[in-house]
Length: 462
Ligand SMILES: [Zn+2]
Ligand SMILES: [Zn+2]
Ligand SMILES: [Zn+2]
Figure 1 (tube, rainbow, N blue to C red):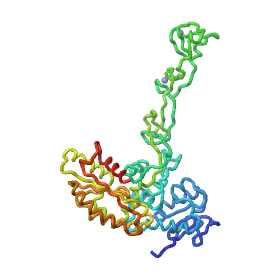
Figure 2 (cartoon, protein in one colour; figure 1 turned 45 degrees about the vertical axis):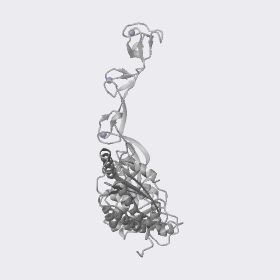
Figure 3 (cartoon, protein in one colour; figure 1 turned 180 degrees about the vertical axis):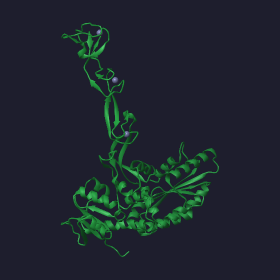
Figure 4 (spheres, rainbow, N blue to C red; figure 1 turned 120 degrees about the vertical axis):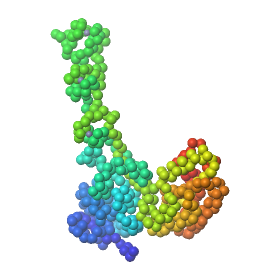
């Protein structure tokens, strides 16, 4: 593409110190939105204002994925939705934008992501080290929300917390910093709870702390004032005079009194009363939820790259590529089979493309992608129709070969040598291929299932 410089817009005041010659200036959001979308937007306004503008921009398609920087201080909303502080000069902006554009072009070639999940993952993938930040918000019943998810949801109803934990279970996202731990009503999910002390006997709210006495003669316990008679202490039950604390009477532990049922008790019971639905719960029945930030996993990054290239998707399709969990399950099942019926055996090959991740980011998305394609082509020549592969990160690749003994394995490994030949070109000479293999059942360890086996082999691949 001939365009090498981004069209930059600045919204708000002009930045006097910045070295930004070729930018368009807008004083209000309406006039920015009235013209064709820019490639990069700089917000020069106080943080709280910038946060609101960002929220608006992220929720409309033309600026959903655009690089948007904040020139002044940033509030939490700016952090959650923006691309950070404004780069020092236009050259830095250009560099960042070109990196962004390579990914955006890949993603734009295919169909624009229809699904909420793809929108979120691609937003993260287009920027380095992006996160889904949790934001404290007293206006929402759960106390926290995720502004990025809200902005990308469009009109879809998304339960952010449920969605995040599901996507994290699928290993596309990983948990970041633990921000808070909140307790929520188990009925309506609200976090607006009032913790109250109630009577341990009848659960009435109207209790009070009251000094009380305990008569040793008859065992009566009652409020202190009921023992006072004409200036001396007298048990209202047995009418004995109480002279010495410790020998005639003492102060019991029970020092709460219920005004409703008159019971005395040591510790009041605690209830959490939901201010939204009105129901009361014992604290152990509340739902506990951890609030965290999230970021894209390596597997998620890989999925985005794969999803946005039709050609690559075809190749991987022909490799019978299975997701992590499916592959573990299949492998565990094969292991169970050979433990029971040792014949026929099966084999497993692990490949590690050392330095591949670094090399890919150095090559850039387009060329890196072409390289991945050629690797895939070579792998395809090695893999047979009945084999199954998995590739959960950039660097590790697994091939399961059913009905294959040590001799069959040796032949396949020989063919794999052709893949390694690809790494002789100078620009990718950093990449090297490490191979490990086992034949089951003889190379299995006791109690090993699919996941444990892969973990053992992965650590041997270093
Ligand atoms: Zn009571
Ligand atoms: Zn008494
Ligand atoms: Zn409730």
